[in-house]
Image 1 (cartoon, rainbow, N blue to C red):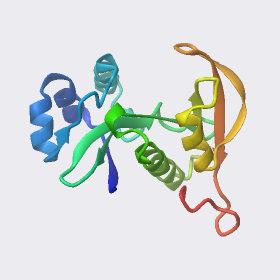
Image 2 (image 1 turned 180 degrees about the vertical axis):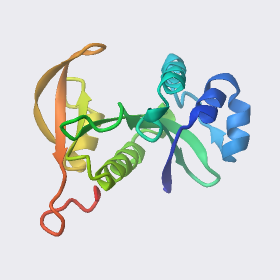
Image 3 (image 1 turned 120 degrees about the horizontal axis):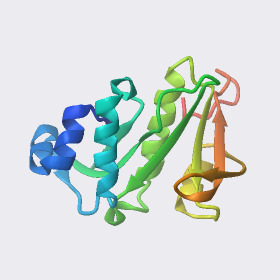
Length: 176
């Protein structure tokens, strides 16, 4: 199954929130049912990009799959690289499309894009503190569990990290 991700600019986020039919037309793609189980998240993404245009490319992305294309989820970064060279990734896929490798493909593309930027030395992610589909995605992509941390929205979570691969030696082909 072909998967692609599209970085959301402000017009795309505005359509996602206010006019999904226009978004379908712009992308020439249908929108899957429950593609975004948290509609408030899209509103927050739109509002944050309005106030901070520097997030463009380091923020929300749409996940497209199938032919003809269908918007099946969202993924992205929590912002540009930190001063110490870290970016955090996140992803969510519509329930009807889960279990098909789409989250893995979307996360792999985020990681690839992150490591194209020389400022990025580590990609991290957080999951609920238990084995689940997200932990399997991260393990497949070579991220390592590094411990517990506190997330202001979720409470205690597991933290996962992947350091920039050394070119030519032990690099994870799904991530560079």
